[in-house]
Image 1 (tube, one colour):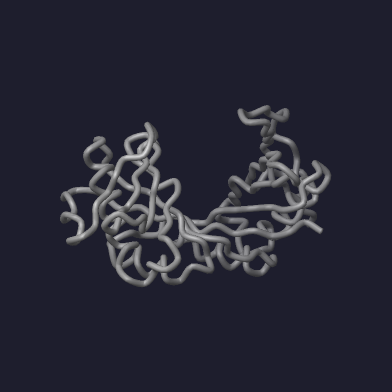
Image 2 (cartoon, helix red, strand yellow; image 1 turned 90 degrees about the vertical axis):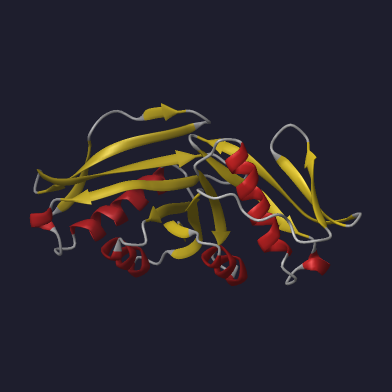
Length: 226
């Protein structure tokens, strides 16, 4: 039996110079699932995204998803993409096995925490100074900058868009203090959750986020399209 992709509609132009298209996954012309891909145009290269992939339960474990994912890569190559990305829920074991088998490498994790109780005050000697109108703060150790962060609204949530601790002060608890202060700022702004991203190679940041009660919602993967 032959597994192929069949367009399920015309290409769509999204915002931000991005295009997408949906496809039916077919076996000998019979639809057994579907997928959606997207291509954006960041500076210097074009990134493709496998936004969704679904195979009917009766057709699983027959290689349909593998063939469909490889076909999606070929479409994205034809669109001029030099890499493909996909995000998988941590509970999606079959999807995780698939991306690993196809040569994807993890790039990071999306995490979230429900905000219910105001965090404690900053440790003695630390203060936070607002910076600009965009929810930014500078963390100060006395008069010296120890780190900074910025929050952006994301629906009923706030996202920790950027955060960093000055090099000489890493490993001394400033990261924990910064995140806890960001949680307080998000609560004050009326947010119910704080979202953040951790690179795959930053084990310290992941351990800290886990210790503070954050849970992984998505694992991000990447594969070059050479």
